Length: 103
Image 1 (cartoon, rainbow, N blue to C red):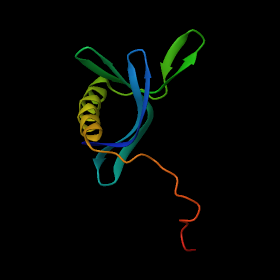
Image 2 (image 1 turned 90 degrees about the vertical axis):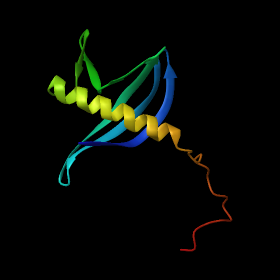
Image 3 (image 1 turned 90 degrees about the horizontal axis):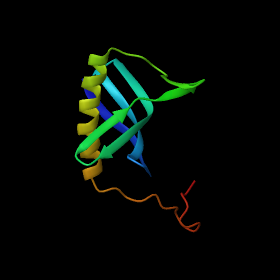
């Protein structure tokens, strides 16, 4: 199993540090994508939450899975996120209008 970070958006609110989309690759032709996962950090503790929605007064997951699978995915996703955050990223800048593509 391998986890790839598709997108990470910094969005600090309380203990939340950001939101991310991940792709969990089980084999060449079998994968799952999770969008809108929360990344949280407090002191030395880091954790992820799977996307959920509010129904009445309760928060319920969009997608339920075996706790063991979730545990493995979270460990791999945190490692992938650390690696992703260590890489230098180029800020998204708009090209000037005079530097358009030639088509």
